[in-house]
Image (cartoon, rainbow, N blue to C red):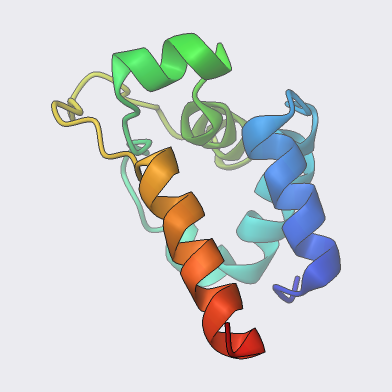
Length: 109
């Protein structure tokens, strides 16, 4: 699967819009693409998500993807080995100001 405007829509739907059923599709694509590598792993560890972010999203997309991959390759998933301690978030105000400034520079205002 090539990352383009169409795959971006699918990935965003999976990560942000509760389309959790896409985990199985992405798992099949990943397992097919990385078959030589994934068969040599002993376990799968999903990237952790900060607990506040998980509360907002209601699920950890990386964990769902890890479960789907593990089911295909028959490997265990260890989800509690890594713990996310810092909440990284882009400030909304800063993002808005950056966007306005960029637009102003382009239009010459």
